[in-house]
Length: 372
Image 1: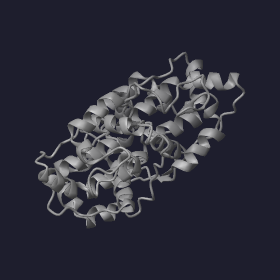
Image 2: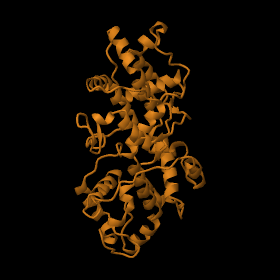
Image 3: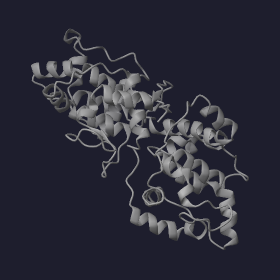
Image 4: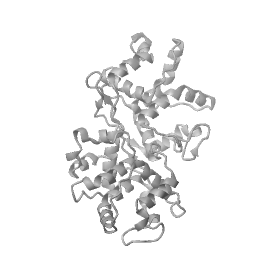
């Protein structure tokens, strides 16, 4: 796992009651540092990721019921924080500081571990492989058609970025081959692609493929998005942060496949590195762009007793105004981890219940804080 540049867009609230707009703040996240933090901060004593770690808390990579976004993760961490701190004290785990940069690294690690990917089903995936005519050209371990590599040679099975790049660049060739065989162009849903991947990744011939999900720095992502012609169409109502809201890399790969016939022909060719750059830029823009509502967030701020301390200068709680654009799901996690225990002590002293949030309430609260 290498670098995942996570664009943490704080949520600007425009006019009161209007959906929040994006902020320009960027905090880069590094999946390698995130993996190290997961170990060094002893999260691994309770939680595991894909079997690596403790068993007293859920495996963060194998939750079959997951449908998580950064907002959901932030709200869950906030809601369960008192229990986590209690368990850490019992195990003698010392809680250290967590900066926004470190929180970003952890989110990058979870992303690289496919924590945000949706669960799939191998049985359905096998049916997709046949129904979409993939099996007509691609053998599992042998070549069926010239230029159609067998599944056992697909490096894309271990890396969704390569998957997106190969589906994109090989689309025209596959379209030609399907036309010759008199097959209609097959649209594919995100769930079908996920199921297909689960099926192919668990074949005897492919089980030993190493996971190789990594992003390069996204310094050139925006520039490539412009130079490849993507920005010319994807503006306004077609902006990707709107069209692809809360989609995973696999879902984006399915969208790119379905979109290709509608592109100007021939579509731009993308190398694997260029695809990494663009997907990093696109994924982060749509995944961390806030959609909270400042007016609702103001009610959350009052109803969850945030105002009791933060509007009371004598409480010692910091003034939250004047940081427009600085608040995001990840900065909220960092603030929780650094200041939460003291907040819990103060709320206990004042006989106030620890606030618990839904993901929508968390998004609304962030929008409100960014409007102050």
